[in-house]
Image (cartoon, rainbow, N blue to C red; front, top):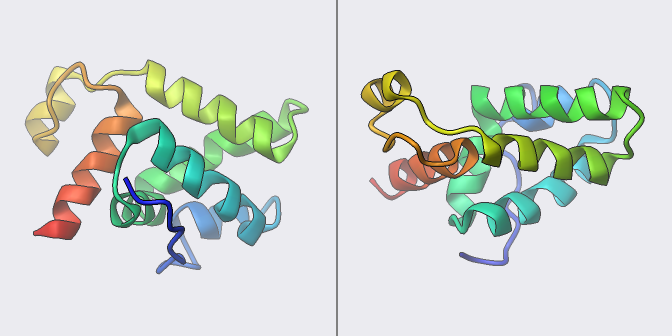
Length: 119
């Protein structure tokens, strides 16, 4: 894992674009990036590419749900990470994506994007 936070490559969509609709996208990115990296142990490229993906948009939706429930931004991101780490990759998702089943959902998808970034 690296400690560097990379800039988004997808300001219109993904996590960054989705958070711009309900909070300061730069603040959300700067909070989410390092804690997702720490939770998953993934590379900075994997974290960036995950957050920039459609899965990152869904992650942002989960953060938005936390804010709507009364959490501040940091707590909402932490709650989303906890929820995504509690879910596991299903057999169907494993077949479709190649991510090993039973891996925590967040770890699986961030690692998937890290591997794609290396290829």
